[in-house]
Length: 459
Image (cartoon, rainbow, N blue to C red):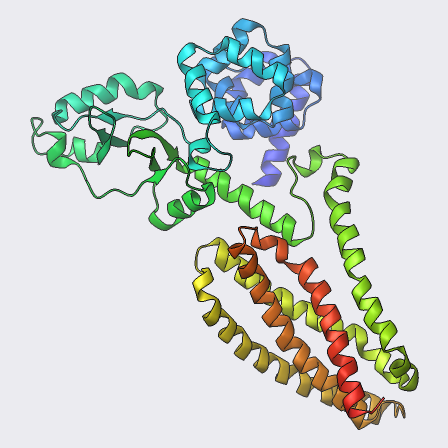
């Protein structure tokens, strides 16, 4: 599929270069807006306005929503006031609010100037809600019905108002003061046995809804759990103010997953796609964490310095340090990734800390013993029998294996506790992933290693 799209994309670019605009327009109007936006992403800046003006008004607006912010800004700066107004008139309120959030101040002023008063008011309402809340990702364009309406009246209302709404399949029943009291679907209305039945007789009253202050991650999780197409949003007094649709929930899931992956890799989350990021942007996102990890690794150096006499007395000990630290770091990362994912999906709460700790402790013991046994056999067979290394004695073998077992246990305990602790402190658990845990476990593994060496070898 990807190869096929690349061929189509290349052909479209060639038509644009050859100025075959009529043929290009005929092909573009058959394509999905997301695919057209992907074509725009690969064009030179001066070609973007040319191709955009080939699109029909409705298709242009749908494509505009899918484009990258940099390309949107480029188009807005080149639009006449009429062209900008035509695009804005076709946008849903939540898409217009997202656009305003992404644009610089001078562009925002122009957007708000060309938006009609109703849309301007709705945009300002959405922007007043906290970032990353349900209120910030909702749309105010939904179909509301009254409980006293008949089925026939409800269908007529949907026909008249539905063209400007983001979704019409799910309709919400509200009182005169906009208090949410029920929900009915278009399927319920179409299959109703009598057109004179009232909405009150058909509606579902046991509703699941969120408030404007609900975290967007929790909202996305509810979509995944209940398979909603839309989710009503109410204010503090139970009055309906908007809906969150599944496409916005999917965007939130993608954003949160990307942010977690970047944090777990030791980077500041980026606002731009990789191909749109300059080397300096990537540098700014990565260097603080690298600096922090470099400084924190000082503890590892201090431990090695403190036990340098032990290393000098038993040279063989130094050969096993990379294996010990690597195994410990990997063990901690396994636990942290598992727990972080559980926290993200809502499967693990702070109250589950005892259960998580007990599970990881037993798992760590099994892993530690298994690794120690294999390590003992490997050292004995390779260093003793194969290479006949006189420095690697059975006592050294015992030190390495005991330290390995304890390191794995400590690493898994640290790996599970740090993300849960971060969550309790209202921090992103992903921050406590691989880089932090590896640094802590490296220091612990060396400390345990030298303590066992001191105890067993007497050095």
